[in-house]
Length: 440
Image (cartoon, rainbow, N blue to C red):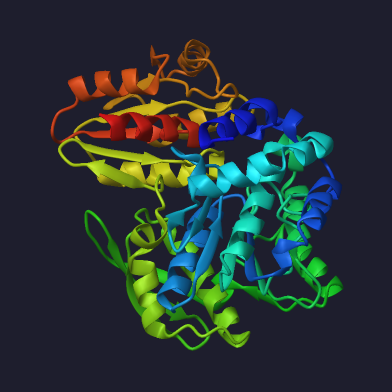
């Protein structure tokens, strides 16, 4: 079986959350445990860090991977979803998994897949574990797919667990309250294993403290220990300093190639995680921390986080896809103060679309802003016409475009050199845009 046929099998025959939503999910770990047992539990053959959270878990995963690489480690990185290429999900030292490995792994065990009938994410997770074990990585950074307690990645024995933050997303699956969502994320807290909580929230912190106490897991709350302050901002990076709150002094000065002021929160979370890894005996020189934050995109291949595509007009895309994430992005857009904003958005139909549209309206309004409503190629996305009608009923009218590239071309034809074009609302909208832009 060649790579192309493998992709047809993965996308066409396995239940996939990206396409089907919650119908593709399994609500227990029995299948992933059976899969891992069949392959001699590859997830136990390397050190790991486990990362969950509503927002920021992708950025923190890539920041930690970059720092660990700069410290001289061979680093595996498993994240989801991908934007352009399936192989983005599984990387070693920033390099995507080999096509030949995928073809052999999937093709060689087809009878086993047919008997177990794994989901897309279960099989992909197993593939990452086997690949990292086969390639003998020193350590792997493993990002959860959804939630934590019942996520397929939750069979590893990490050196450290990280929960970036809690906000409303996937409420039909994880729960309708922050406490319920926190309970699911807290499922990655392991016995006698330290856990870093990125952001303090009065409703969710007690959930994490209770779980950590029950598991005898040392707990560190990042934003109680440190704060990150932006000291300078450029087109392709910003400078920052990290201050120890208790000592009231600067403990690190650096720069970040991941843009957006919201990255300051992720930097604090990642820095705290590094401190805990140091205590666990992982050698990470301060120079590696500085260089790691500075070169995340180069070291790990991360795209889609406040990614500036071009200047004059400025084109930026971001994968924020829930109210909390959209709120941060909109604040960043408002700070740019362009002559005119062109907002190209599409959303998955199972998201809180009304709330996200309200955020755009409240923060940016209609004056000086043109909205372009679109959809991605993924089935879960709301129809563009339906989205435009919904937005219009809320007083933020705009035209509908069935493809992201159509909306972008119209926006480019209208935009002046001092304008800003934003593309976002969904991982999949950004993915379609990047595919189009790369080909273009």
